[in-house]
Length: 201
Image (cartoon, rainbow, N blue to C red; front, side, top):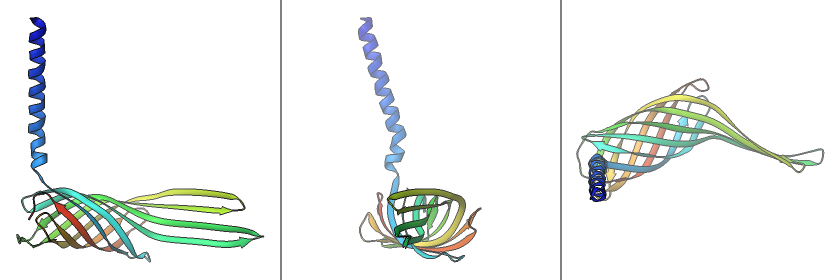
């Protein structure tokens, strides 16, 4: 009899735990979430120039706002060398890259079912790093160097253009400023994202 009571108590505790977890998870499952991937051009001053950039965003909508996390990658420089010295062929390559990790908020300026413009603000860390490799005379070597982590903040605008209830594209233009030990620079970033939104338009 005692064993039966313990078994029943265990069942009730398990049921209460599952119910509690479901109640906690319900707001997450019910949230209007959005995910996107993007590509575009990143233009930086200081002689860095214009380079392709790729990345993505993910977050959730609330009212007229969208809170997101983001990642973008840009190859800032690439070089290669092939030469011969004392009869030995030497080949070397090197790249300098920028990875942005951050987040922000965009706020819708309208409620159109097809085109919704928005303003965006963002803040994060720009991680600058370089890697290279060289080979010659039967010997090869590869190295990588983490150069700097610099704070960035940005402001801009864009629009969600819906092609279906849950998906569309987002052209966006952003001014971004880097303040750090390696680079203090202004940049302009133009991207186009393909997005999916659970709540729809």
